[in-house]
Amino acid sequence: MRLSSHDDFTRLREIIVGSAANYTGHDRDVSFELFHHENLTGFRSDWAYPRLVTPTEAGARPEQWAINRRYAEELAEDVEDLAQVLAELGITVHRPIPLPADPAPIAGLGWTAPPVPALNIRDNTLILGEEIIETPPAIRARYLETRLLAQVFTAYWQAGARWTTMPRPVLTDASFDLSYARDATTTLGGPTEPIDDPQPSPYDVGYEMMLDGAQVLRLGRDLVVNIAQANHARGVDWLERHLGDRYRIHRVYRMADNHIDSMLLALRPGVFLARHDGIRDMLPEPLQSWKFIVPPQPDTGAFPTYGDADLVLTSPYIDLNVLSVDEDTVLVNQDCTGLIKTLEAEHFTVVPVRHRHRRLFGGGFHCFTLDTRRDGTCEDYLT
Ligand SMILES: NC(=[NH2+])NCCC[C@H](N)C(=O)O
Image 1 (cartoon, protein in one colour):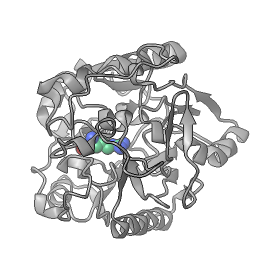
Image 2 (cartoon, protein in one colour):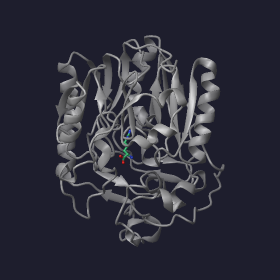
Image 3 (spheres, helix red, strand yellow):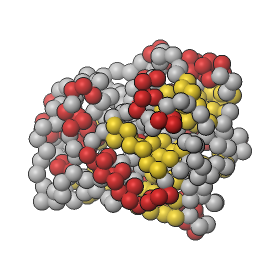
Image 4 (cartoon, helix red, strand yellow):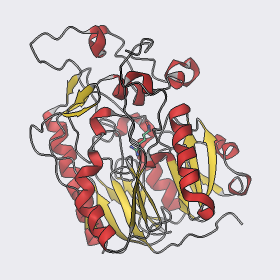
């Protein structure tokens, strides 16, 4: 259980695979709406936003958006299959505590929310070499998600890893910088509602640090970090002060609304998988000369057909969210044939893996996982 992971592409030895157990709903409070703002489409209606809804039954939580039971069951099947595929590739696989059925709600100062399973575990933790860094969550329902990983993190800590938690936000309405959500040029899907009236709270502390591990591209001693608003900027400032001169942090502005692992992933030194070539200009100069593999536009026929009751949380580019086993071998969604052909034409070995409902649950194979040991070191890939 030695923790050591500095990148997304050197030989993978150990990994944590998330859990989809009991993923029954999304809690559509202001923190959820802001985080998923860019991909939420077609729900411009009062009932889509809790503050405009009068609970119909005593105690009913209007924010709760039920997930189709069959989709949740199929997701769980696919996540267990992913864990099996990785184990069969000789990789040691760890798992979080599965969320129990009907869990008690969690609470912060002035809010409550139903917890969600530790599925997209890339989001709330950053592994930098021998250090576990729990990142400050932006969604209230995910506030305690990393506690489901505490058993695994403790084992790595007992084996010598460092274990750090970034300052935990209070997450009152006023904690959130709304500038990205209000900026019409960034909202692809159309806002669910103009979020213009944050409710005051006695716990207000102003804009807080909020930064997900999936906003960080790890390249040995270089970290490319996406910033879309002030919450992210404060998180990166903390990270830079914490890391000191051990790492070089490269800030990029609005490469995405938050996560960049369906925008840009390094497949090996000198080679990126990218959503589009325009990303090149956002990167530090030494990375602009790397090869960019840009697959064909997503085939919308490669996704299940969903109805109005199904909340689509990602773009159709989600299948760029691949997981590398080593610098030549990549796990790819089996339904994304354009990407598979593109990578094979570039002489990568593709391992096709089933993952049906990646647009409903916010992530792909990179999101579902947290690599904890790879062969790479804190290399300088930029010189
Ligand atoms: N670590 C993650 N959960 N990444 C998922 C990013 C999905 C991205 N927002 C998209 O719509 O394509």
